[in-house]
Image 1 (spheres, rainbow, N blue to C red):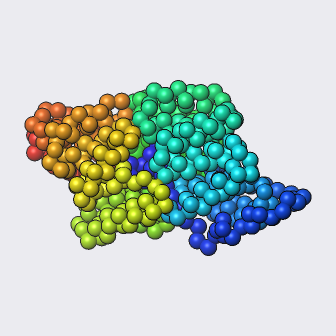
Image 2 (cartoon, helix red, strand yellow):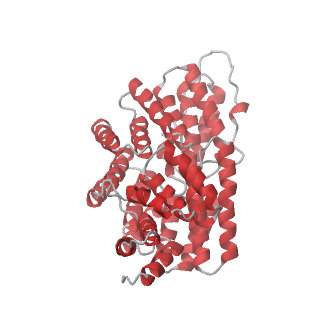
Image 3 (cartoon, rainbow, N blue to C red):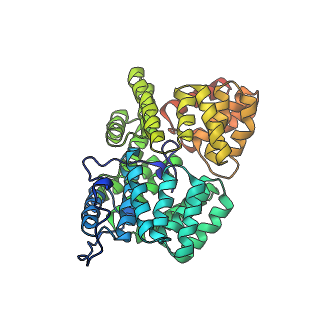
Length: 438
C-alpha cells in the first residue's frame, strides 16, 4: 500500500480503550466439546466500529474456546489491523501474544504466520515480515494477506524488481482489492501513473464492501493529490468518507487537499480530528505545518513535540521509528538526531524514501555535497514525489547547480503545488531567488 511519508500504513499502531487483555483470557481450559464458532469477518477488511466489534466477538469466542487456533490468529491480526485505524503501539504486545498462542496450538498455521508478518511490518521489521510472509505462503500459496505482505515487505526493502514479480504472481493467485492496491503502488513507483490509476479504478468497481470501497477510493484520492489534481482527490476522499465515515486516511487526505487549495479552516478541522483520534507522525506534522504556514508557531511546535512522544511510545513497544525520526527532525527538530536516524534506516533498507530522508538530513547538517547522490537515488526509479523534487532542488542549489535546481523546483511545484504548506512556500521562494518561473 502506498506509504504515508510519516507514519506509513504498514507502521500504524493501535489502542482499544477498555478492551479485554489477552492475559485475562483463560489459556489453559481443558479440551472439551466447543460451542459453535462465532462467524467473524476478516479483520483486515473491516474498519472503525466494525473492527472493534470483531475484536470483542473474537475475545468472547476465545473465552469459550481457548484452544481455537484460528480464533487466536484472527484476534492477533485484528490487533495489528487496528494499528491502521487508531494509533497507539501498546497493542502490539497483545497481538504478539495472540499470534504466539495460535502457533503454539497449531505450528506452521498460515493465518498466524501471516499475522506475525503483519506485526513485523507494523513494527518496521521488513526483513522479518518478508521471511514470515514467505513461511505463510509455503504453507498456503493462496493466503491473500501473505501475498500482499510479501509485496509490502519487498517494496519497503527497496527490492522493487522483486516486488514487481511478486505482485504479478499475487494477481495471478488471488486477484482482489488487497492485491490490486499493491499492484497500483508498484506501478506508481515505476513511474506508470496512468496504469496505476487504471488498476485502482477497476479495483473500486470490483470492491464489494463499504470498507473496501473506502480504502480504494482513498488510494485514488492520494494518487490524484500527489499529482496536483485536488478536485479529483477531494471527490475520491468524499466517496471514501461516505462509505466509511471513520476512515482516517481519507479524512487526512481531504485535509491535505483542502490545505493545498487554500481552504485552511476546513483543512484544520479535518487534521485536528485526525490527530485527536490517531496522533501519528504524518498527521501531526501535517497539522503543525499548516499551523506554521498560518503564522501560529506556538501551535505548530506543540504538534511537532507530540511526534517525539509518539516515537518514545512506539519504541517502547518494539517499533523501529528511525524513518519517522529522520523526516520530522530534519525539518522540525534536531538535525543531528535526524542524521543518525536516517543513516541507520538507510543501512537497513535502501529505498526511495530512506534515500530522500538521508539526503535531506545531510543537507540539514550542512553536508549538501554528500547529500547529492542520495537525492538523485531517491528520484531515479520514475516515482514522482514533489517533496523529493523539492529536496533535490534545494540540495542542487546549495551545491551551486542552479540550472538543475530550477528544473527540480519547477517540477515539484508543477507536480503538486500544495505538497506541503511550508515546503511549497520554501520551494517557491528559492525558485524565485534562482530566477526561475512557475
